[in-house]
Image (cartoon, rainbow, N blue to C red; front, side, top):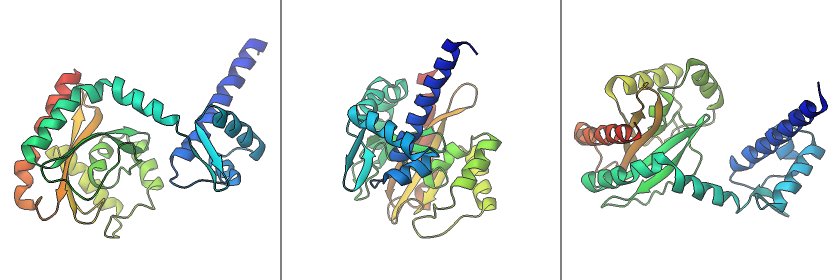
Amino acid sequence: MPATDASSASNMRSLERAIDVLEVLDSSTQPLRLSEISRRAGLHVATTKRILTVLESRGRVEHDEAGFRAGLALLFGAHAYLESSPLVAHARPVVQELASVTGYTASLFARSGLARAVVLRVEGTSPMRYVLPTGERLPLTLGAGKVLAAYLEPDELERLVESEQDHPSATGERQTRAELDRDLAAVREQGYYFALQERAIGVGSIAAPILNAEGRCVAGIQIAGRVQELTELREQEVAVEVRRAAAVIAQKLG
């Protein structure tokens, strides 16, 4: 291999390792010790330490006696995404209208790997005590995440099921594979998913997939409210509005 090719391959591997370390940190809500980061990233301790030192010097990592954690500078990238994303720009007025029309809190979320994150949230006329922070890593096997999971490739779905063993519902129930497959099939058949207390006690939600022209799910839109208000009696009525909003966003995206 020519020297330039070897150097390029080495640089790419270094970049991949740095991203591996960042992914370990952004998946944890607690500071992590060097040895734990090394173990989770599958890297040698010395290699992990060198990467963390560089990332800390650029503000992407913070470090104190409790351990290493994601740094403040990572927020700049998140803000840049929210301001420049065509998905967020096209969806913002639609999400605002959905919250106004239904009175429930409306959210837009997108998938990254085998997780999802809320990228836009608008409170309804009856704000909830339950807060779903923008950017929090959320599972695909609970609540609104299922409208994204319903359109995964078969191999992706298998990896998801294998990785989601530690995500019971808010009530402590664990869904069987057959029950999950049933819910995902229902999403594809009816175009939405109605969840009660899957992500949080006392909260219900209705979500719909946003599909592009090729039928690929690019995002999801959801309304959420207290279970006393968002009952099965309102399911069809509200689901129509959520599906309409999803279709409008899909049309705007082209």
